[in-house]
Length: 421
Image 1 (cartoon, one colour):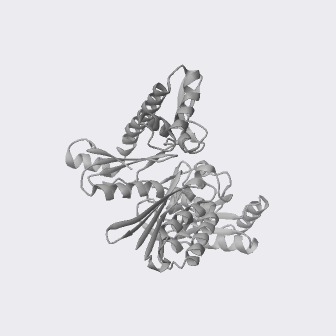
Image 2 (image 1 turned 135 degrees about the horizontal axis):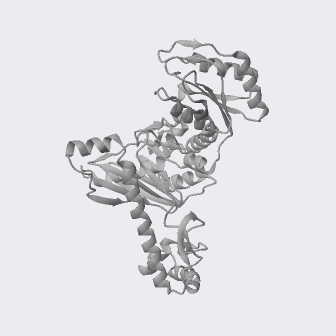
Image 3 (image 1 turned 180 degrees about the horizontal axis):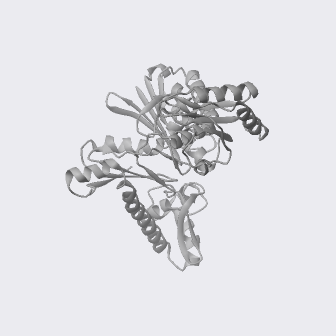
């Protein structure tokens, strides 16, 4: 039996699958402050009446790293760069605790300038005095010759044994110094939190008698073993949107072009499937507003979902971008798009009277009936989604695969359908 769990911003969903058939599904509210518990609640629901040893594989997608980056969480980290000659050093000050040291390796992997050992020790002391315990060391062309990165890491750890150092060549072997620096930095930021999450999951699985392989869904739709993810936590960023794309592929199974719209409780994920193949982000995943070496689908997450808070402010209606709680029909404190759809659709979700009450609180001061307000909410959500999809096409048009498709086919990309998840 195969077991899959997807952690969303509002709900965590799980499915038990065997022999081409879905045996069981479970949906449980996501606890943002404890994603591990959210996963285990779903896991226990799926395992009811079954033995852990029956499970042969587990695949997880989680928003842990995404949430850390979005909220500025994780560990405070320093970035030590060995750029060598030829770069504008001001371009390298893209993180608050970035240090540039002397030393250089050329594109053939030859050391053309030795490290200044004294400078390395002074930088290490400055980092330690600032109370920083996580450090990423990245040298230009370290994928050709990693000796200077190794040497800096050794000095820092000899001088300050409490420091944990991430070396850029271990994170990525691809060209592009700046993207490797971004990837290494965020690896240092998220590594401890991810390790704690992974250890908790592994312990819980062991307690339940599950010995199956555990894989984590990556941003490009592939998977990696849980053990490997300990060294590459940033590969899991956007695993939620990646799950949406893979789900859409499973639903369509053809070579048509589709826009994927996954409306969750907190966010809406957008992606493009071009003639049956997901469009990839050629420059890597955006992390902290900067491109990285993390392979990713060309996706976007909008702060708009079924549980987005609805307000009437200064004579106008606003939907989101924040989510305060579940929809009013499920006991939440404010009206949401879910309540609007629930009210207009005859109350198929939760308690219709609670949806009506939440809408009335806003409609009265706005001089509208609950039905008129609900219709305005739905129109605004649709308008935002339409604008975002149009905006995404402007971004997608810059991707090489998109341009090549148009050249080969001698026509503009026109979606055949929208796939709602």
